[in-house]
Image 1 (spheres, rainbow, N blue to C red):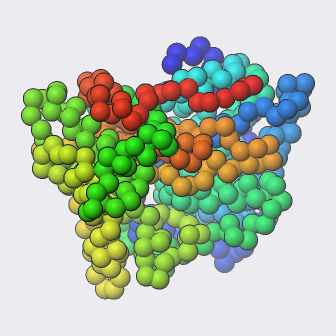
Image 2: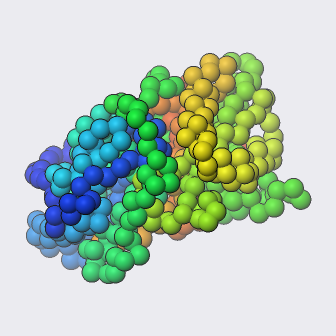
Image 3: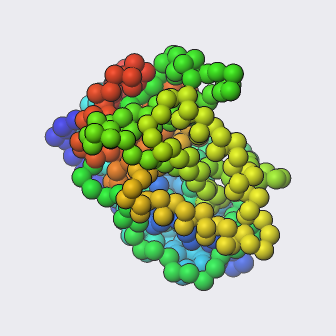
Length: 441
């Protein structure tokens, strides 16, 4: 989407925790998983419509909303105190209350101008930092940008360093922030910084920039699967050996199949491929780790296929890897050889990414993160958008607002994308970048 309007920064300030971090918490130890994660920001943008009556005085409304966001953010940082610190060295964060960056901005257009045809390049204007910025390791670990539209709508963009957070931690942070803003109980949203006790850090250097894997001319597009289309897709996949396939399994299988078909059309032959997916380990440990475990708690499953296959087989490969995750991964992370096992899992992913004879697709699922529940007091978001690392063969799955569908943000090489988005089987189930339903925005 070509959009002439540009975001204009009005004010930039530092938000510090509302009370000082106690001396005993001044050093936060990174976990081994935190250390091994490439340096980048995890981004999300929450889009809110104008409230009834907001158009009477947009300036007063923006001032009120901005103040509420900043005040509640300051209070939230007392719980998420490492987010207000800075990375000290390869094993720790210095929780010295330097604060988080808060940017207030304006854009002279309507929110509906963005929602008519969401575009990854346009969405980046609403984020407070480039997601590949080295500042994720050298500066602010948390940045927020509140952008106010001409119509009274609001975009809240959040960037959190991947060194101290995964998507589940981002969700928990936003949940705590919302609870603080609405004077709700934050007890259940209080984070547990326990990663270093489960995955002790080792003395290694932290990379300063995102790993340069698969980088080439690429393009990002959004594909939307409604709940009814996913139900039809599940019916197509279901069998006696594949009972109750999930939304993520079925959509992933179709995306994988379509990507392989695009490669075959381009090259004239099929290539082996891997559909790599980060898996949240919190619920898969025995006993389970708390959902409030803050930090990175992910490992990749890597289902492989040697040749282009039927949809049922691809979904089955994904299901088998997920079902075997506890046995094949989690059990190996306990005991004396846990460090070697952890390095081995990350090395496996790195080797796949560097293998020129295999196509590696990395698919992250943000489904069930409940980001549409983020009501700061003016209703939940009308839409939740993301940005993607500019690497080809990367997918992020998001819930639609009704919770039944899935939005897939896919990045491919330009030629592969042209073939991908014209695939007739895909188009039976997915719409290419449809408008976000909206009214009075």
